Length: 461
Image 1 (cartoon, rainbow, N blue to C red):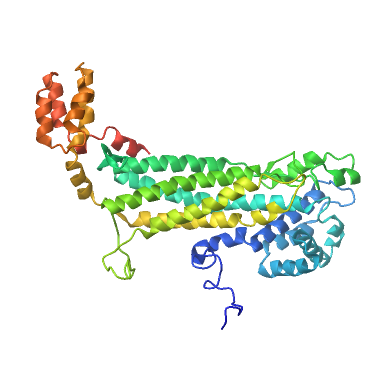
Image 2: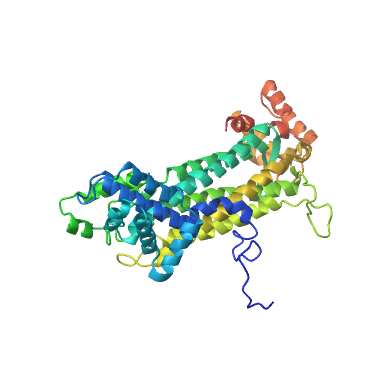
């Protein structure tokens, strides 16, 4: 075989790892954002528009459909399969136009019906291809968000919340600038991520999905030429809203894609929160705070048999980054179009599944990593026992309460850049001119006990 030999498309020969190495993880996306998925949504929109015209008595020449005719059209949608999509692609090779190929496919389907031949003149009535495409993509992202993205994010959020609750009271040495800082708990640090993730999930869920249905340049030109007395804007709004989308009344030939930029930015922010989490967890694994449950037959290193590497968090971090790179371009490019339209959005939109695919892949990797985590509480405790200097903060704060001058400076001289043990701190506290009860309370504080409201905050998430 030479490098010029054609290879069949398989998991091993796919150019994109989403359809190759990671195909098992991204299989669920295929009915939505593949070429097949896009064609399926186009067929759905064309059929629903034909039904709308008839059932709302929009066109006097096209009276309402019978129950049998409705059933025939519903069968076209419900039974749409790869063979039907392949037929449309074959038609496209002649038309060199993807949406017109869908119309011709439906024309053939109607012609094969005993009664639906009467509907053929009204297929794609007054539509530009972008009337169909923008709704097809709108339904695609609406369904992807509902069926794939939000459930995966919610599952991960729930796993992290469970982890936060489980470790709510496990004290941990915090690190600001990489240096020992006031203690926290592992649960509280995970709760911080849960709150951020939950907020971004809600913002993603709240993003409107807009649709337009107003003709070649957004002015209902053809509609009004044929039926000048109809309120086509109201009819278009009703149709789009019946599909479950929000109405955009002002557009050029294309829906301007601002909502897509908003949605992709929301996903990217969510991904960024999880990049931050993956990096922190990678660090905690490195410190020994978390161990990872070993999986039988897995190999961590080709030469070092002891290794259990944090590969799930590394994989997640990398793929969240890939997703965000795609979303960054989509969000910046899609809202920009020359005059009433150019074709650059068409080729770019076909990559929305790539951004979502890498996001889903990363979410699954992150979830696998979380499922393997085991906290080593003894390691956290040992680090705290070596960091008595972090109690300089409560001591100087108590001194301030009782009006002791230069309290900060006194603790700075005692502790900054130095290792301090319990005995030295106890001796310092014993000499403080504060009430005996407060002195006793200070002397009872340990690094592990100096966690403020961390445990309660983690338990409430």
